Length: 137
Image 1 (cartoon, rainbow, N blue to C red):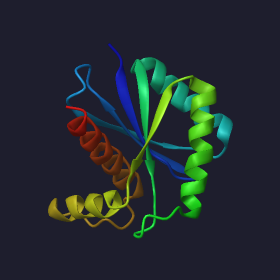
Image 2 (image 1 turned 180 degrees about the vertical axis):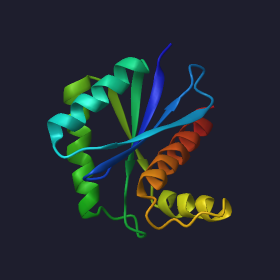
Image 3 (image 1 turned 120 degrees about the vertical axis):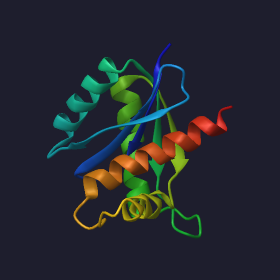
């Protein structure tokens, strides 16, 4: 039984979370930092193999009005890359509020969200995956 990988895409950083085998719990993974597409694909390939991923859920940033944004267009290109490179199903998830929710979680923990981009990306991926898993039941 495979796992589900959640990705919070960024042009230099990718936040990640993976489900447990039962697809009930979201577990944050280290954020991927990359300088080029080849490096990023190889790092993802290693994680997908190691964690036995069967499906990817990808954050899709829309504007507050629900319109596509420039980064949303980049995410659509990234989705095509993932499907081509890994031959896995990739599902888009609305991620409009995950960054603010992640910052709120850090503030509740007594940490300032400034300069914690890697942690925010990881928490955002976890929030997306938790929502996805909850809605699958």
